[in-house]
Length: 96
Image 1 (cartoon, rainbow, N blue to C red):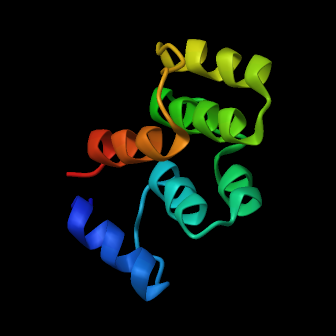
Image 2: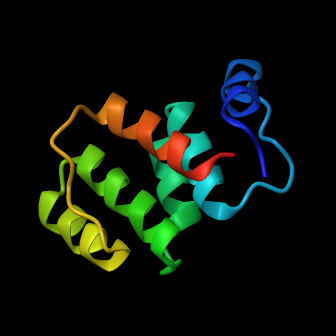
């Protein structure tokens, strides 16, 4: 696993860390501005963490119906905060 500081530094360095779980890879690609690759990484996964990231990505896309479906699959509710704050929240929740 990776801590938050190292995760954010890897974004600045534009170097995908080795051995990241798929849900963190998706957040990493999203953090670099590559929504499509982020979605491609997570699209077929159904575990709760992946579903949570999938929900966020559809919210970011503006597909709220689909986002709400994935939030429900993750056992979460759509947050009422900015996408930037949600991304930060996800990093805090899923990094060490």
